[in-house]
Amino acid sequence: MATISCLCGNIDTSVQLDTEQTQLQLCHCQQCRASVGQLCSSYHLLQHEPKLHGLQEYKQSNHISRFFCKTCGAHVFAHSKLNSHFFVASGLLVAPIPVREIVHWKLSDTGDGGLGVYLPGTESPAVSCRLDATRSPISKEPPNWRQADVKEQSLYARCICGGVEFYITKPDASSSQATSPWPDLLVPYYTGSGANPDDTKWWLRDGGTRYLAGTCVCNTCRLSSGFPIQTWAFVPKSNIFNVDGSPLDFNRGKMQRHNSSPGVYREFCGCCGATVFWHCDERPLLIDVSVGLLQANGVRAEDWLEWAPSRVSFAELAVQSDLIGRLEEGVNRLSHK
Image (tube, rainbow, N blue to C red; front, side, top):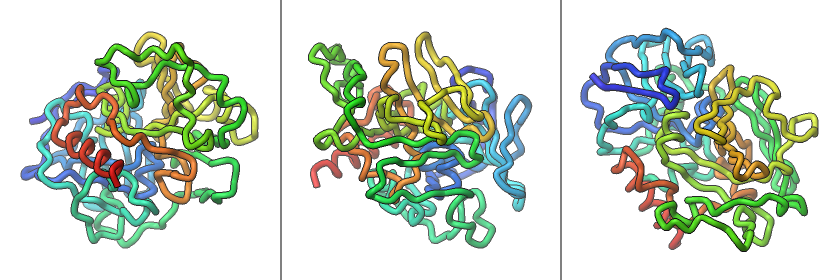
């Protein structure tokens, strides 16, 4: 038996994993990304149907359902009805399974390799989502999927159900109005040097034309999403708009908030559970945007984002150290190319 728990503690139970779990299966399909808000999903197969009481169900299709915590938004289980398989989100395991091999599903959907550029592995020959492996190819794009034009000055973002949708704009004069301490992504927490007395606008990159993005593996991100690797883009609130052009409103649509700690807020879709935003009272004008929702030409959105080249945020605190060690190696390898 394996124990799982989510950030708020409402989910604290045991599940029976399928035997011989030697591979970490990462699915990069557009349906998974839009459902969870991450660059990929990762689930472990279960032997038996788990207890679903108290979870919010999102019926992704006639044959796939996902279940998440109503309070903190953590994805917990998925159900493939065609073969009666149940899966558990890998990031919730209190004692993670050692990663001997990584298998990538639907890398072709990413356009640029996505998280796979950091994590070498075997590519599955399957042409469907990992949760839908018994079926023929699923449609490539979720409903209302928009691909950005590189010349456009706005980038659309949307979860799979459409309960949360917004867009971001390119950096402009307003982008420098925010103030913020240095993030762990650039100045590790253990240095004690996070203060930013010079008010450096570290989130603006490439001559002020792109935003900083990176990976975070802290326990709160892991337990609030259900997955071990969170990807954030740091975007000023002044550059985030509701789809009607009005300034960002956290109360729009199906957006739901969880106060993960005093003065710290996480938004997720209350309908499908997708991770959306992180923000805090210390820097209210700078918002972390979950990259998996961005509908760019490539999922890394490199026309818009510059990825941090040398650090995985809070890697020292990661529970799944073998996987995060591979991630760190990949980040450093890519930065030296």
